[in-house]
Amino acid sequence: LAKTTQPISMDSYEGQEVNITCSHNNIATNDYITWYQQFPSQGPRFIIQGYKTKVTNEVASLFIPADRKSSTLSLPRVSLSDTAVYYCLVGQGGKLIFGQGTELSVKP
Amino acid sequence: ETGVTQTPRHLVMGMTNKKSLKCEQHLGHNAMYWYKQSAKKPLELMFVYSLEERVENNSVPSRFSPECPNSSHLFLHLHTLQPEDSALYLCASSQDFRSSNQPQHFGDGTRLSIL
Image (cartoon, rainbow over all chains, first blue to last red; front, side):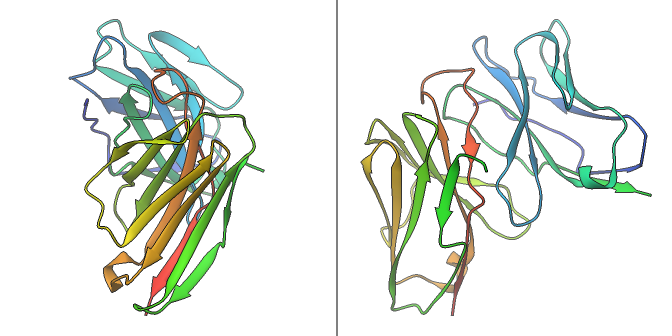
């Protein structure tokens, strides 16, 4: 199972773009890259998923280089409500391993 | 509304009690999962069910007993728990355990405290 590495914490200010990079050197050919957001005392919420290049939805973008050994979650114009823990996962189907995640703190 | 509902949201029990956690998914998914999240620790996968059959059991103590009567419901039966079992227990579901591009959908968990 591929292991991921991401920063433990990040600080940002309201209105800024935040980029969180995740390393996954051992990603397998069939693995997808998935990002989740978790608020205290709640379950993780799916944000975005991708396999290669760029994926964009209404809340975020995901950039994946050609070698797929890393990925970057981009949150445009963050607000205070984006303060949460963000998890990067790679894997197949139900075999997902959650790491420590990145604790994002957005300040006014 | 997440599509995955867990009850109760909070539970306090003694070490000799028997209780059950319930999870129900309204998404038509075929796979369901139990996770444990202790304070300041990553989520730990406990059990996986696919079409009501257990497909994964990650060395979980026998004091935790899962049950999946159908693809929409998942239970976690608890007995003789220890203080270190206090944690947030999360249920999740996904379309297919084997699919690579089907994300898991989580409930908001049951906060369990063992006295």
